[in-house]
Image 1: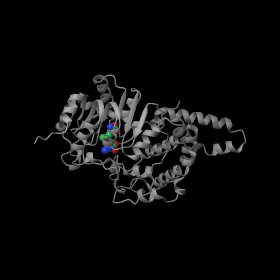
Image 2: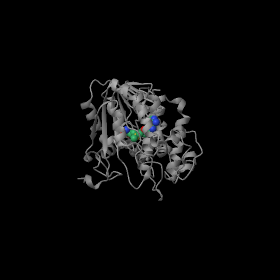
Image 3: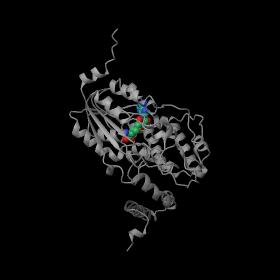
Image 4: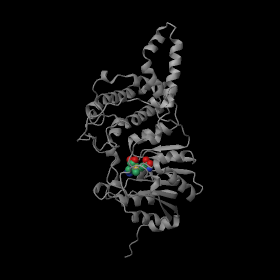
Length: 404
Ligand SMILES: C[S@@+](CC[C@H](N)C(=O)[O-])C[C@H]1O[C@@H](n2cnc3c(N)ncnc32)[C@H](O)[C@@H]1O
């Protein structure tokens, strides 16, 4: 009797291995070259069966992203459900990982998703947008990537810049090679397939980055080799999604929505700088990179991370056409770091929202997100829900008249 605990494999891997062994031994006696080849490469095929074909696809929430609401999405969605009625169109205007959009997609008639980062936009299109794509074709491409031997791959833009820093040198060569190959075969791919491959690349390299979860810095220690196994993301096709890549304050003037969920950055840490490596990887215009963290020239810098934050927030609220405004706010303030200081005060948010209509404030109990480690000891998550009163809003935001 085999003691399962003594083998370092989970049930799925064991079953896959057993099935694979059966196939191979049943074919052993047929002397055809393909079978011989398969037997010779058994060790290669088992991980492929495991990782590409049999293992579950990578879910949207498995990405590391500062300020993502994955852990408290139940809390947010339950409050929205309880406090609002007759919502048909839901907008996630600072979508980030789109963890809230994903929940909304299975619930509301239409969901508008927006974020101004290139990499986030590709990810939304890959996971959600309706489009033609062929799973077997993509699995074949991924299988070929997984068979590559990084030692035989030449230096490239990605490895020259990021190798030995954000990724182990050989792995960085592989990443650069795969990214270039996706571009080279673009003409054979549909738009959806192209987006799926790019998002799949991001999700798989996210797990093995030599960072603490963002690319503002890398860990200055020798990097252990971890093989890059490309596993496809969990692709869905939704009819009810509309995806934008715009500045929130510009988009706010173009859309009508029953409810807008608002989760901007609140401190001076710019998302385009934290996730610059993914922006460079997705744009693939191979810019000159600067500084220790190898960042490109700034693009999509958010006014919400500057002294203009309060003003921008007020402008956003004033320009949105919605019946409900739902705002996430957190106090990830760390007294030791100026960059983590919030740019908009809690009272300022409350005041601006109160000018639009009846506003309720909810605080998330620590047990929701504090079970493991959080970056901050006194981490509080708040949610404001405002039922917009058009008259009150128009009156309080009317330009001040000057009487002579
Ligand atoms: C706090 S994160 C949102 C997190 C998200 N709710 C989640 O669960 O992953 C803020 C997002 O706003 C985006 N952003 C910042 N300023 C923006 C702007 N002016 N217009 C559009 N997106 C912006 C950033 O790229 C970032 O992804």
